Length: 173
Image 1 (cartoon, rainbow, N blue to C red):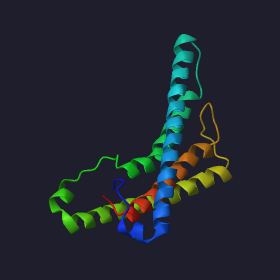
Image 2: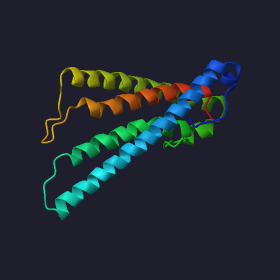
Image 3: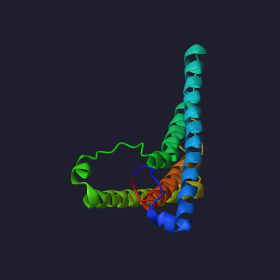
Image 4: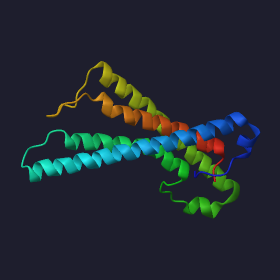
């Protein structure tokens, strides 16, 4: 679903319209945070290249930091991508069906997407809590605690789930 005009439901119910606007603002903010996380990952790789190939020293944290920051950026930016319709979609069959059939197919796809994101949200928060309580580390040379790397995954999947709800309330395209 792409960001569209206000749905009839949102026009009739100001609370729904408020939720959709709030989620849109939150998704934009998360996209800015995702951009910062991505830039941090790029900077870490540049630092690694400089230290390793210019100074001739070994590195210990840059690769792992980049994996965590770019993965977190992907999930933190996903609600914005859903909101703007920037995701890749194959619409051949819905476009051929058109009308009510297209709307039904969009709703079914949205429900599946919402269910998947809700399951991912639940699993990521459980995994993050286990990492926090178990004081898990990555087990690498750098060996940082694992939970800070899992927080953006849990937050991003939570925001994506909430944005799915907003898109369904918005009413689609």
